[in-house]
Amino acid sequence: MGDYNQDSIRYIAITPSGSYFATLNSTPDDARALLLQLLSTDFELLYSLELVAELADLEEPQAMGLFQQLLDRGFVALTDTPPEIHRGPLEELLPDMLKQLSDSGKALLADDQGFCLSSTGYGAEQSETLAALAADLISLQERHKQVLNGDLGLAGESWGIMNAVGQSQIGCWVIHIGHQRFCLVISDMPRLNQQAYAELLSCLARRYLEY
Image 1: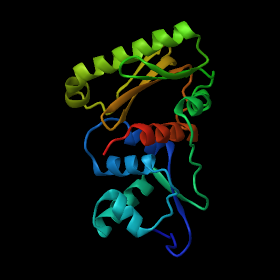
Image 2: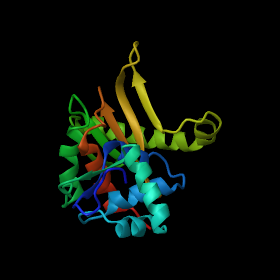
Image 3: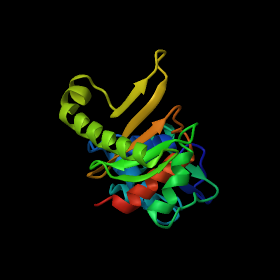
């Protein structure tokens, strides 16, 4: 794996971009499956060839080729210290993570039934309205995915309200955790490049991912 010394101790960390790719849609994909496994683990991922092969459910040569691709694309990283695993009730963990994903501190997470799991920066009525909107957008995306994701070749399932110069005023990102779907609603400038984004998706994967 490049200049990496396999005798040294390294931990596997999934990056925000890797987390985004893992939950972008539910299309079967070896890379996405491995990333979801990494997201959903509740223990420190000490790097080893055996661990990667086990998580990927592949023979070691194929597993290492896949893992190298994830490294090259910046979807995972090898670190000297293990990433922090956030444990505790989801409703206590989500607000702080959500706050870090918007430059104005306004963000919300809803499920596909319109239930608001958590919000920050919005009033109760605003949260209820945005959660209902999020569920409608998930349904809208599902009805038109053949054209949007198939015919037009659009990989993502994000929606937004833009101002006259194309800047986001509010954006909605559909998140796939196995068969479960959620919607992340963010006002103003999104900050999905924060590690809090990977941490949030990891919490959801540990709670909702079914194998």
